Length: 161
Image (tube, rainbow, N blue to C red):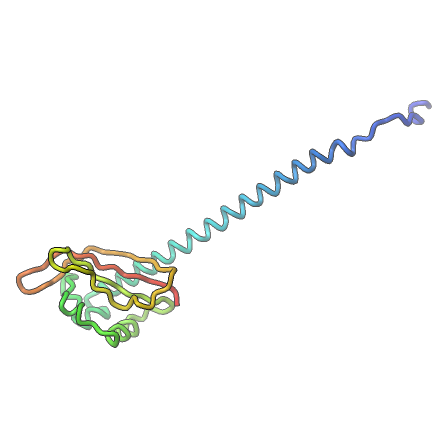
């Protein structure tokens, strides 16, 4: 039985350690990539949710029987009255936010009219906005007076409370 008593064999334990280290580094990189993809996906889904919330607020405000319609700002046909929009006060904004039944988000809005008719946008309720703001815009007709209705852009900005 010389085969069983031969002690000249070479141990391979030390040669498997570098291979094991390479495999473990590969697993670490794989899990780091998966974690990055998961985080990126969650951020994108949150952004989509914020845009959907902003679009919901925009559609709710643009309804003729919505909070702006009750103030006379939105006229039949979705036309925005610039004189009434410009005359909205802070109390009107608080009333609009209260009557809109939109909970969990704060919002403000602005109306931009062509530079030929109005030199700066009219902004309402966005003085206290946060950094994490999402904006959605819609092209609308803007009533200036009985003789003029011009194109404009109505923008709603939404942020979390």
